[in-house]
Amino acid sequence: MRARKITEGVYWVGVIDPDRKLFEEITPLPDGTSYNSYLVRGKEKTALIDTVEPEFCDVLLDRLENLNVDHIDYVVSNHAEQDHSGSLPMVLERYPEARILATPRAKKMLLELLPLPEDDLGVVEDGETVDLGGRTLEFIHAPWVHWPETMFTYLREDRILFSCDLFGSHMATNDLFVKDEGRVLDTARRYYAEVMMPYSGPVRRNMEKIKDLPIISIAPSHGPVYDRPELILEAYRSWVDEVPRNLVVLPYVSMHGSTKKMVTYLTESLIEKGVRVQCFNLADTDVGRLSMAMVEAATVVFGSPNILNGMHPKVVYVAYLMNALRVKARYATIIGSFGWAEKMDEQLKALLGNLRVELLKPVLTLGLPGKEDYSALDELAAAIARNHAAVTSDWGKTQSEEVTAEGHPK
Ligand code: FEO
Image 1 (spheres, helix red, strand yellow):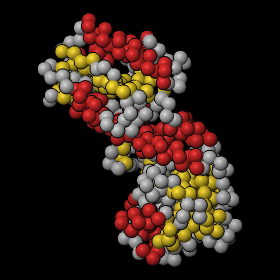
Image 2 (image 1 turned 180 degrees about the vertical axis):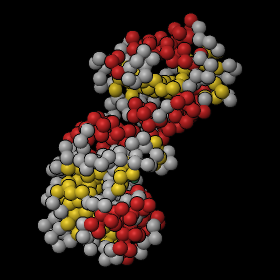
Image 3 (image 1 turned 90 degrees about the vertical axis):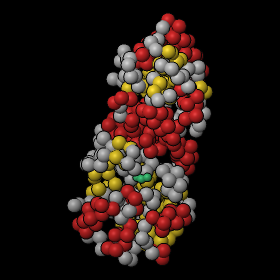
Image 4 (image 1 turned 30 degrees about the horizontal axis):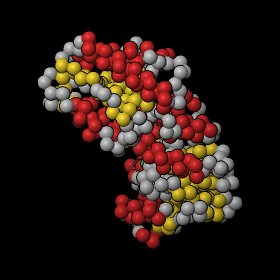
């Protein structure tokens, strides 16, 4: 296993994992992932930045051996989560002289999570530097990208930012640098939606912190290295922006067709009024794709029949997830059909406690929707269009080219 050269003296020594299907046992990984570890050689000292998922530690050690690394002075731990720090005990076993450098919070967490001797861990403060001999590592505390202890490491002379989980993409590509920008952006957007979206505030603050740093490359902990950093920085600026886009996301389930009729009618009515819509039939949907759509949507309309005296469990799950992901939507409501119980709007309100959403008037109908229900859906569409005209950043631009007649993304 060979190391891959980023520039003279700086190498990628990580692991590509195309077989991983889930992260944290919830996040789908349709493109696998990578665990990136980087080696930096100065004239006098050598540092390893992050390690890999422990089951692949032998790959990391093999790449270091092939690079003739017989001594490591520092192992920088940007993040205590297992996929980056889980191999620390094995790395220390092979390189017992190495000292782990981490934020004070990370040190505490590493000692709680891993069998490590406390004496081997040192703390670095925000802005502290380490001289490797002609190369300087600067540590930038960046809490909550993804856990509270996270930090960036900046290699000053080469202007490389090792950004930890931030700006990553779950992608098992063998490209060291970004080659296919469209594909990487799509994967990075999925990663943002599933991993970073709940922390959009801290992400904004940490991006502000590095905005004047001269950066030639961004080397994240997952996915390829950005040799055109503006690609991912510009995308993130848009994703973390608090102003939503003119988009309704409509996740729904229909058991016997009535709710589906309402979903189809509302979609048509919204498109007619200049509102973009993306529908997701939860009977068979990729929750990652749904989360990606939620990144910029101004309104979420849930479509659900009533079952077991409440919303369909698949809709409940998505409402719970959207609440946990803290989507930026400003408005939400529910439409659907019921047989004998109609309390779904109260249930939805209870599920969205984290969100600063205004709940719009629901449209719930007994059995098949009739003329009055369709009028109510037209009124709902008109209210959404009015709201979007007032609060979205792209109102009035071309609306319909990205959706099919049913509102599914093409
Ligand atoms: Fe890639 Fe938060 O771990």
